[in-house]
Amino acid sequence: MSLISFANSRWGPPAGISLVRLLPAALASKLASSLADRVAAQVGSPLVEAVRTNQAVVRELPREHPEVDRAVRTVLRTMAKSYLVLFRLMRSGHAGLSKAGELDADLIAAATENLEAGRGLMYAGAHTVGLDLLLLLIGGLGYPIQALAYPESEASYAVTNRIRRSFGVDLSPTDFSSLRQAIKHLRGGGIVVTAVDRPDPRGELLEFFGRPARLLVGHARLAIRTGAPIMVGGTYQEESGRYRAVLLDMLESRPYQEHPTGEVALAQAVMRVHERFIRQRPDQWMMFYPVWPAPAKE
Image (cartoon, rainbow, N blue to C red; front, side, top):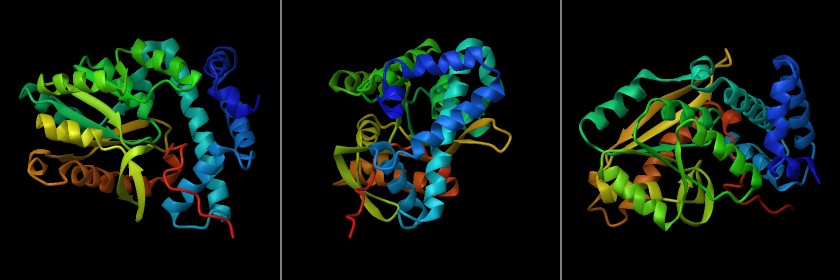
């Protein structure tokens, strides 16, 4: 079994949890970086190649550029350390959340304003570092939240999803039943949270970093159908090591209701916002699926 296969198995997260429990924080972090470097060295693995292609496109560099090599290692190291934070929070519970990161005041104010007005709110995030912590922080506020996630296709997802649910996050795999629930939730003045930057062959062609990418537009469809605004939010890690969730933009869905291709147009507007945010910190974009096909080798 390769290191990547092990990490995605049902044994991967428990092994990480054990590291946090048994080792001092500095040693666990050093070991996590070493393991990430070993994964980065597995040239040709789908995960490494996906990160390489994604980082090359965002940085507008050839896939074999030395800066892209460094970016692959940095992304994988950042991912490994962020999981250590997540596993450490399992032990500290809600009391430890404020030590690890925080929600920006503007984000909280916008969410509260919508809730008090009885309006539903669609949160559209991206897989930047700190997304998991954002879910835990929002779950701790007691807001009526439903989080839409991809089906637990890998055993490790089931473990990490249990962590999220333990912090009060109502997590449901995206299917017909959960989408019906999301419509009801938004119309009842609740918040629905999802990430919108993972590629999917069932999606629509949107422009992302100047290239066509097939991405889902369900968040735009839900917003238009219910009249809920879309809160575009981002997460990142500060130089101090703390994580922060920020409000990037608020997009009203009602102007798109009469648009002939409103769902695609609104989803495109969301991706424009994320594109600007990801470009600021490309090595904090934790996307491990190929958003764009790798170019054919000559």
